[in-house]
Length: 110
Image (cartoon, rainbow, N blue to C red; front, side, top):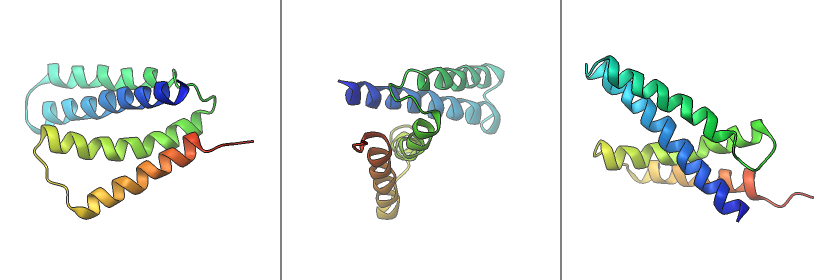
């Protein structure tokens, strides 16, 4: 159950951070205005709180692993929201990052 909870929290963190950054991007780069930017800032703040619920006790380990989740999540966001088409190197890079997440977070430690 702990791994499932951790994975769910990583997914929620990715949604908040990537979504928040996208909202800020839309507000500034696409001239959608201050409400979009404010919503993005709130989402980015929520990301910071979600990470605190990870069951692992070490901030550095959680944030390092989240980096890999962010890479994969960003590509997925691009595909779903922005109609971005990753190439094989994008997929390979994301897979390497996600393998890193598994090693950092879920490797047996004794």
